[in-house]
Image (tube, rainbow, N blue to C red; front, side, top):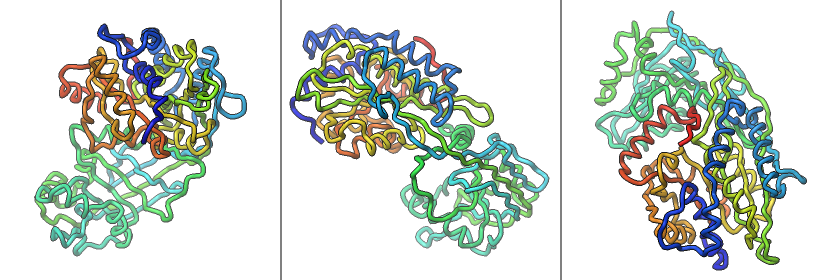
Length: 496
């Protein structure tokens, strides 16, 4: 995608604000004197104050469709108003209201095998899609290996077992004698579940394969949270029986009196052996769900351009203010670093720009619903409050807070080459000795997982800006990986 030539010069200053929110480096400038002055006026205090306010207990994790999220939206609308920005939401307000449907698994959901009762969240969670109403299921449990039937790898985990009316127990992970690419093809989840359902399975228990990067506690925390979708989103065309994700510690107790221990069965399966069998135990599963409707809002503010013609075009800054809110068990996810700090950077830029006279108009949008699939961004591009054909570019702030670990030294290349904005950011980073680092985990698909992607799909040049300190990159990636497991979304903001 191409940005207009006349847009390029003004964008240099805008990108620089993202790069220089901590300090302005003392070397030959790539910007005009006016742009340098603007960049130097960014206030770390504003970033700290806004982040602290959004991550406070009063905001209750800023959940989409929850009171804390509404409180955060009003707070941001007030910040924009005090900066003299014009409302650009619904009517003459800063808020663009969006309807959502919300579903959650209630903590009184239960799972019992034989005489052993398992604890929700500690031992098991319910994976989506959730049933339309609460459901109780009873039945014998049968181990079905990995649930794979494939002539290509000469494996049939369903040979000789009867799943009709049974609860199918399936291993997560893969055998050691099959390469990743082949296994991904033969263990396709939709095909796997369709196969097990056709054999009569009434529910599934998937035993999670623990690993250091993604322990069961990390997965359980995520799956136990609320699920949010746009109110007009389509339902699945068919129903899938309840899916339990169980921890390996729960599996040890699940296999008691089965004639084989969990550890032994797992090891044999990994070696490619056939391990499917009845587990000689009756199970009772109660999935308690709640479905409701809710509203939440994007917060949209306008700084009108000074040029009579160019003000018809707009640059859009985005950052999502939502986090995971408060769970039904009282757990609060403050979400300082994903993404209160990203919103704070956007507000700091708005503070500076409000005292300038940019030629183009600028929209600042604090988006809701990002954590559930970029929902606020998708809603805005489909119901824009500015003519979308006159959006010149989108600059998006998101991340896990690595850019507050020290003086900014690197920006991560998340799809910079998808538009000619990439050439521009290379120009600015070179001038300020900020390196562009390659995506450390391309397999994670980060480019598709933040709000800029909704704009990108509509043909709008977009940048997703996130980075970190310079120095030992591998050490930073390792620190980030550990932080994701131990603090992500729980972390409150600590001033630096």
